Every structure is written in structure tokens, then in C-alpha cells.
Length: 88
Image 1 (cartoon, rainbow, N blue to C red):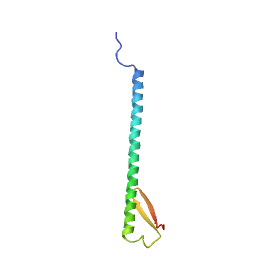
Image 2 (tube, helix red, strand yellow):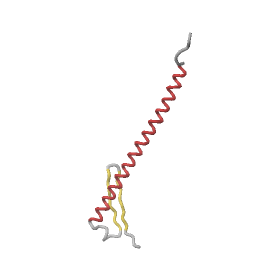
Image 3 (tube, helix red, strand yellow):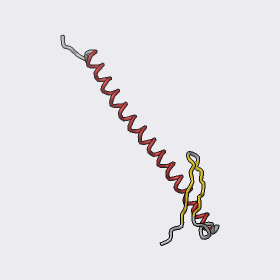
Image 4 (cartoon, one colour):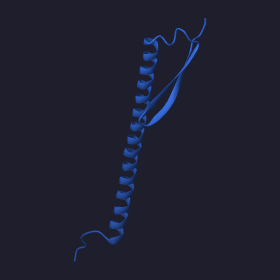
């Protein structure tokens, strides 16, 4: 009689190896997603800051002041931009 198939130990080891590999792959995708979301938040904050700075220049706030602090708010973060006039 010829032995065919796999032993229980071989199946358990194969399932374990596949589970470890899948866990590693899922972790990489999760990290990539978190990194992408964080980059999106930074980009959104930078765009908002640029918009606030352009608005300040457009409204002639900057020429009359030595230091200006402009608050900004994005959906995931808040902050303030301080513009300081430098004399060369």
C-alpha cells in the first residue's frame, strides 16, 4: 500500500507558515495606509498654511507689521503660522 497525502504535522506547519506570511503582508499594507493618511494630513496643513499666508499678503497685513501670527485649522490638526519680517 502506497502512502498518499500529508501528515497532520505537515499540515499544521504549512498553515503556520502561511499565517505568519499573511500577517506580515497585512502589516505592511496597514503601515503603508497609515503613512499615506499622515502624508495627506501634512499636505492639507501645508496647503491651508499657504492659503493663509497668501491671504495675509493680499490683505496687506504683512507690510505694516514686524511679526504676524495666523491661526489655521484643518480637519485633523490645528496650529499657527508666525511670519516675521527679516531685515537684511
